[in-house]
Length: 333
Ligand code: SAM
Ligand code: SF4
Image (cartoon, rainbow, N blue to C red; front, top):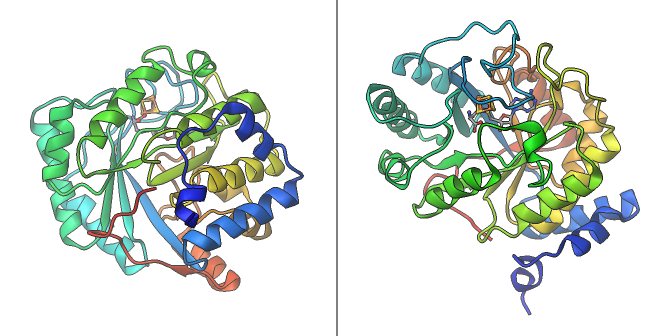
């Protein structure tokens, strides 16, 4: 039996995932570190930059989100950015070692028309710079997924966020199956899938185990799995949630690494609040992808993001290197 046959499975049962998740923490981390080393050059880290190309005023009611029009969060909505502005950000990012540019829009779904055409142009222009482009634009039809693919899109982000059973406590304006349907539409194209979740929404360990089981039963696995730690945004229903203990974050990351060995595992929102030593533990648990920034923020100023310089110093300190874009060289498990 090859390692791939042994490690890449899509028939995980919740009880099996629970047994992995509940192991003694350091055993779990060592196991994840070993899986990481079998499937990835262990020093490589993908550095990504997130650009909010259309900010705020979103009709969805995601209870964590600064951009939902349902909550008073103090965000000033911004219209769709100019293509040239996005290209300039991409050029600066590339010069700083970024290999993936993620374009996020606070939309419920993509609508055909001038704005979608403008996003397609952003994808073409940034792809021409040699960067992986990822978009997160809300729900998509199969036809829209096809148009994104024709523009050269490398990845599409669409997070499941939490377990199916906890989902209605977080979002009521769409269903879990809406999310899975959009992911299925992406899978009908060569675009890779970026899909993960958020910790700290008031979910139980069981919810985290169920989310990880759902992700690991997608076939193929998402090529990229972002794990966000809730940024508690004043004005949202999640503003007063308890902080997530580092130990829980490590448990989720290590379990994700074991279940989805070939996927890129990204520590996304919340990393700015972790010390360098805490982040080193996350890399050991299998993280091989991060967001970095030149403006100190992820999507909005409510979610801080470490700077390119801070991250370059961190990677150098830990002997890690920013990897090149994988455009034209896709991996799945
Ligand atoms: N509207 C698109 C969508 O929801 O798919 C894209 C933008 S949305 C901001 C992308 C992801 O960012 C969400 O799925 C969520 O996982 C994460 N996110 C948003 N607000 C967050 C917060 N306050 N803390 C942590 N993660 C957050
Ligand atoms: Fe809208 Fe996305 Fe925020 Fe939900 S997470 S409110 S869909 S921008």
